[in-house]
Image 1 (tube, one colour):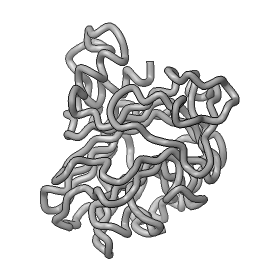
Image 2 (cartoon, helix red, strand yellow; image 1 turned 90 degrees about the vertical axis):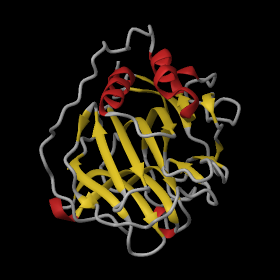
Image 3 (spheres, helix red, strand yellow; image 1 turned 180 degrees about the horizontal axis):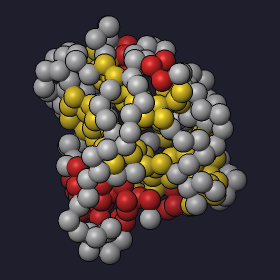
Image 4 (cartoon, helix red, strand yellow; image 1 turned 30 degrees about the vertical axis):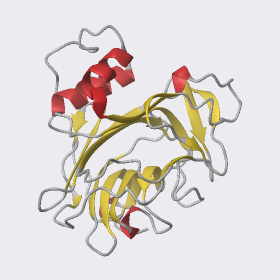
Length: 272
């Protein structure tokens, strides 16, 4: 897999705490998400709101997108379960099971975005894609591709680390790769992407804590976020490559860069 190695494990640091309480005085997780995301919510899935029965495969109608652009079931449907590590209803993604969005998901000339995912991977950790905008070669196969997931890190004894990246269709992919992932643990991962500066900027926080920067973060590819390719939740290009093999309870894309305080508050709310 391209653009996957080179980071080293580092300690968690730079905890960012918002000034308000866990749900920002808004009264619920959903009110907080709407207050922070507003019209910038591109897509928002909350498995706890699904109409699907536990143990049943998802259908397009039962995904229950809360706001924004709706996804559809890929070639094989994820299953609705009660996830023990997440302690909530979740969608279980096995090999070849995905949700997908059609082309033109992102607005024209979009250069920034923030992706939130609450997930757990019960099995052995290896390479796992949560979200990817790209082609059969992945996010790195197109200018302006995006990826969020976890990946084996050759700079850290080949242990699996948090991973997010921006593709350029060549050898200048920008990617973050650092800090080991914990197997079978509830995790809220927030990735921010900005293609406007030189170099491109990718940042990651986990459970409200900013992770130390590492990876390949010195590339500039002068492009907007890609619109001409599909986006997938749960695997690469609706296939068996780097399947999530895990559970997702919440997934949100917001088309602006959230502040550290906003990211921390939303992370804590999703974990409550």
